[in-house]
Image (cartoon, rainbow, N blue to C red):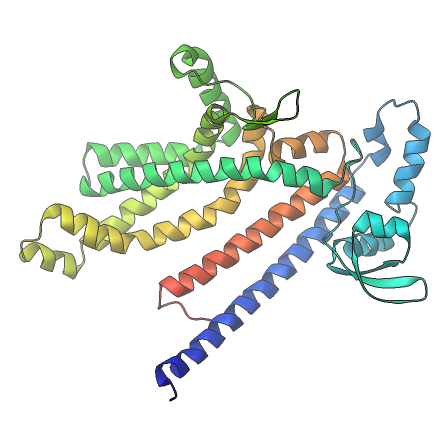
Length: 366
């Protein structure tokens, strides 16, 4: 027997798949644009990659190695084409044992001395350390991701609570206080906030808080065992949470005020429903949608905004190592980190768009 109810869902599924494919295509265009822009920016800046070698004894040999490995003796368009070829999942290379080891590819088919391969994107090797950029970024991402997620959880819990308190006390002391602190939180630069929190909570109140001024969440000891230090996450997470906390507070407050003025809230009050039930089961449930959209959209922004916070607290993550790489003119790592952040922005925005279209039926799948 044919399930007509299931057949009726097929067009909706196809619309959702088309919606995802369209957003994914937009995302690929964005990542491509970021890649090209970053490539040209770092190749027209003053300075040479050889400057990152310092005063090594074999500096001339290392300089020649960099020129050959990164095709620095080629015209700029050729360098861009070769860089995009390295980034591509499907790419063409000389079929040599050295390339097979370098790219760790799976050959698709070959002709002559060339081979079409499937591989992971190759970001090059660091000018400073000669380590695969992908390996360093993979090690850094976990620390930065933990920092961004911790900041987002803290901002959500405090922001929803303070926004709800402000909405229930509209025009009173708590409302004015929440709005004032929100404006301050949005306006304060991240590096100023980081230094203030570091000095206040880590130095002057250090004996009471027992929180270290600097340090990383993950660290290996002398024997190579990975150690986790959650106490080092508190101050940078608090610093990073301030701006989204201020925004979530304002959005929760405004959304709650709008929902509390709706007819179904007045109907629930007329029926004698308990005040707590009206607030939590009816008002907050309907007011939370814009908050959820804001929260998910802020995760990628927090990963990018963690750069200066990580540097102030010497928190070794993607942001800290990127700033060090910029100072050392380590272009492969900086470009790899920038492209990685762009991919995260695209991926998270895609997930947000799909979730929002699924949660809110008013959204058109276009």
